Structure formats: C-alpha cells, structure tokens
Length: 165
Image (cartoon, rainbow, N blue to C red; front, side, top):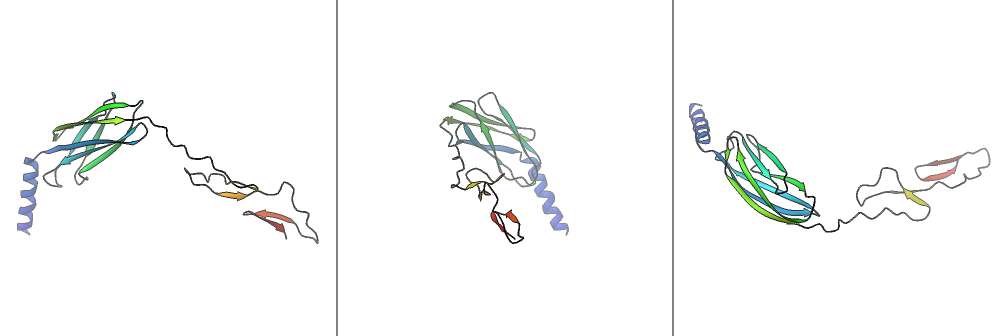
C-alpha cells in the first residue's frame, strides 16, 4: 500500500513540475461559412490540473476552452463566419497552460443544400411534427366527406384507416 502511495505521489509531483501546454490547433471548413476548430494539449499525466486556452477565430471572435483533470486531450468547437475569406485561427494557453499555435482556414460561402420540401403522393399529407431534416412521414388524408354508414354502424377514422363499425 505504501509503495502504491509513493507512486501516486511521485506522479503527482512530476505532473506539478511538467506544465500542460498547447500542442496544436487545426481548423477546417465543415459546412458553408462554418469551421471546425480542434485544439490539442500535451499533458505529462492525466493528473495535470487545469489547462485553459483562448481561441481567436480571426474574425474578432474568441472562445475559451477549459480542460480539467481527466478531460480528453483534444477539444473541438464549431464556429460560423459572417462571410467567406481566409482567417488566422490562433490558440494561446492561459491559467496553468502554456504554449501558443496558429493556423489559417479558408472559408467558402457555397450554397447550403436546403432540404427538399417534403412531398407526399396525392391523397396523403405530411404528418404534423414529423419533419426532421430530409426525413418525414406521410399519412393518409381523411376523405373530404365521411362514408355513409348503414346498418346502425358509424363512420370512423383513426391511424390512417377509415371505415364503418
């Protein structure tokens, strides 16, 4: 037990001496006018305390990334640019984090592919609240006029089915 405690204390001491630092930054266009920015840090051990980074997105916008004990080595953020162009993206460590890196990303406006308007065959309509991107559900329309039921039965319409009961 004492040996295990000594190892843990040694790791904690080496982590305290080896400061976490920003290792890299990368950026790529992920959609029209949008970029995915990835920041990686170098940590001596997962026991490294806190490491924060400020990401300057090159358009006057900056965002803060916070790293805590046990966080993954890389973090990503999505950013939407107002217009097409080439932007310098830079990251700088703050708090208990050191290092700085930069990269550039060229953003193109491009026409965003709009999802096709849902279309159902004749006699069918798009079910309420069923549209999610390109996915949707069609349901049968009830007849304009209910069926004339005979023999003491009554017209019904439920779950896309009509009839007399």
